[in-house]
Image (cartoon, rainbow, N blue to C red; front, top):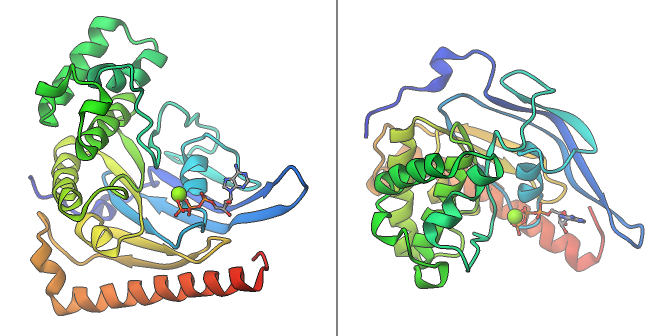
Length: 278
Ligand SMILES: Nc1ncnc2c1ncn2[C@@H]1O[C@H](COP(=O)(O)OP(=O)(O)OP(=O)(O)O)[C@@H](O)[C@H]1O
Ligand SMILES: [Mg+2]
């Protein structure tokens, strides 16, 4: 993979920016859950940013707001500095579950976003086939999702996301349901693809090692309601290797991120035991 320099070196307006987002859900019985509180973050063009936080802290909520699928109760999202830019269909969003349609082939699933954008059939097949070659999926074009392994399904779902909106990808725990070996393979694969496509990624994960192997920067969210608790730069050159995680400065960073995450998970469990919403 070609080495990529820090995108902050050429910092202009961030590609994506969230300003003071708060999200409150009201359930049918009138109860209010505050999922996010005053979240601000920025992602530069070409950057890989990870977002780590305990379960239920609002990560999926945050991504769906950034993707334009929901409106926040309070706050603003800017795409290329524009608070009024349409994000739906321009920001690639890979949901937490792969949501592949079982009656469509891998290629048929991958072109779904292009179809919604009314790209002509020949053109969408051409683009999808080219991406399948890049992704090492060519021989599975005609396979149906139940015939694919979990890792391959995630690659097809990722292809669908990249085809629909290649510049900015919001990935919601893409490897969460996979075994450790498949996960490690796909992390290497994603790092390589990110380098090759020159795209921008915001990745949600529970896994600190995954954040350290993939990201330029990491945000840690508190337990619900999610607030930004910590933001750290990852001081590692690319291409990354697992052995780099053993370096003293990276081990110290990992310990710091883990402590923040574990404290928050414990705080959440204690609140849940007391039966009180936060
Ligand atoms: N559509 C909704 N209506 C009401 N409450 C919701 C809705 N979506 C999410 N919530 C609540 O908002 C909070 C945050 O949920 P969210 O799915 O964003 O968390 P998460 O960090 O992605 O969790 P996980 O790590 O388990 O995926 C939870 O308390 C959840 O119950
Ligand atoms: Mg989630």
